Image (tube, rainbow, N blue to C red; front, side, top):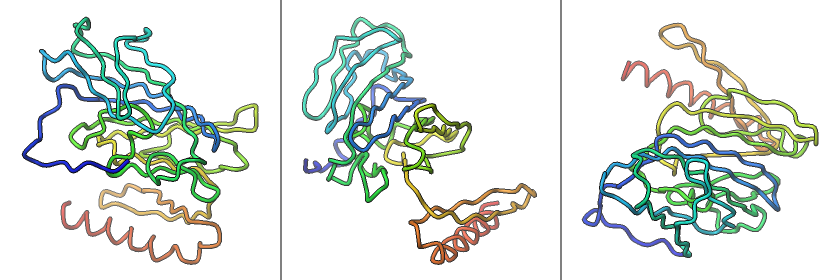
Length: 243
């Protein structure tokens, strides 16, 4: 679907925002199940309609505050929720969607690239993963759990810090990431695959050790050092310039 032009003169502040979102990806190239649990806040007390962006996936279910929710209208570009009976200024939505990364040729959302599965969410790709307020002025904190075949996808990467992980009984494994800094949905990223890894470290002015990891396609490790050194120089400059 061709993107529609958007103009600043038409900008309106959102009636709702998302403060936190927890994503669970059960990854498989032929069938990926995504469960998104989002914390919404009503910014306009009089607002009774919530419009969510979404397309290109199979919609499985929606719950509001852990109860099945039926007051919605679905179309080819999103979901419209009737919240006229919801008085709470904060509420939680749980939305389950199903995707086929191997058949996604748009290079937007979640798709298969070679033997890896990855995302491209800028500028409006997140809406191809789940229903969301997919706009740059909605900033949320992301927690992402990824489960996948361990042999095929030994590395499971996403935004933020790795906080947990482990093996599952069926030859799969899982990793959970937490990003403490609110950000728009177009900055969300996920990559699952088998890569070469270049490791290094950076010591901040305060003496804190920061682990640096650079993942590259197999066979390209000898080409990664320039990028790593550039990263370290950029971090050093950022400290010196902005303290």
